[in-house]
Length: 237
Picture (cartoon, rainbow, N blue to C red):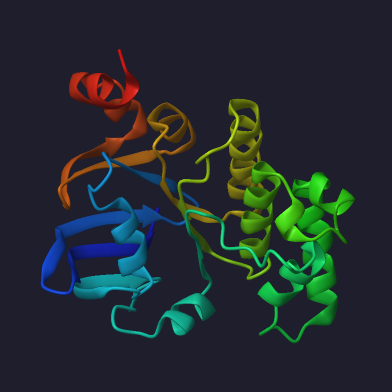
């Protein structure tokens, strides 16, 4: 299958400090790839670098076209949706207002209405709370809203940063089930940063392990999962 996203020789900098060192990976169209690593390994920076939110060098190609150096807004218009850690919802707006704001650049009103219905089919809880202020939702519901907002962009690629952070295990399992449905039914590719390595490896088809801004291991998730170092460092057995 062809690569939707190709990252080669990616370097990222915060001021004079280099955070990524020649990072490279591919994401297949329709695939789910996960980035594993300890805190500070460079996982979140990789997502930011793809969106040009930090200074970078190297190559980032999306659907065959170079996107490194483009404005973040332009990257979003290419159908790349970034869901940052902390969810980033507009807490004083309602659920519906959050979803409609995500589609503000679109002119296809019928398409927007259809996508709202589709989003609510994935997240029925949000439909029940459609007029509720986002800031009054539970943590799990806010994470659902963050993913739902990204879907209103009609993304081909979703960049998800720690979607399980701070959530109860049952809510996390529900969200990951929905993410799998989105991938399978809407064919949305995903790049997942996740501290829960066991969950991430179960969801993803390919995995890359980062240490101090470098890729130190990669392969199919089933292979990475069975690596002794990965098991000891990230899976706890």
